[in-house]
Length: 202
Image 1 (spheres, helix red, strand yellow):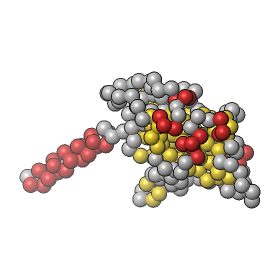
Image 2 (cartoon, rainbow, N blue to C red; image 1 turned 30 degrees about the horizontal axis):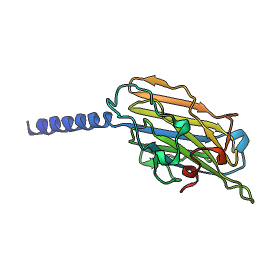
Image 3 (cartoon, one colour; image 1 turned 60 degrees about the vertical axis):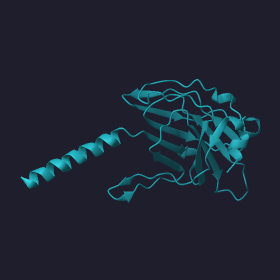
Image 4 (cartoon, rainbow, N blue to C red; image 1 turned 60 degrees about the horizontal axis):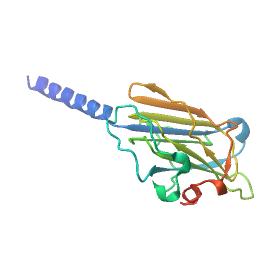
């Protein structure tokens, strides 16, 4: 009988743990250079997150919504940012960290992604000379409790910004996924980008 009570208690705790986990927001971002154009080269990929200083009230986290923020016209004083980091959050599989391939970057964490602005900085480490970094700016316009973003086919465009705000998202239940190829995506000279100061800050 005592064993049965312990077993029941363990089952309840396990169920409660799974329920809590199920109610935790999740955000995953994968960045992949164009393997055909970057073969034999090595790039350093860094990431940071910003959000509007006057963000929309989140309301019901589980209810789909689209942001009204005009991300294209934000100024440095309109956003709050953290610092760049060059190590993502590798997933642990069977006690071992997942190895991220060369010229890729992966971030995963328990973050509510809506209205986050993903900023990616890429620098060329294979050239003897110095080339200005390139940047990718991806605002999360659609609300979802669980968000997966994949930015792929990236060609290194020194001194340019790829502002990726025009994308389609697939939704399934509480999850949203964006699989965006940036192949031939037009670049904006970083000097002409409204958030230049934010991009170039550490």
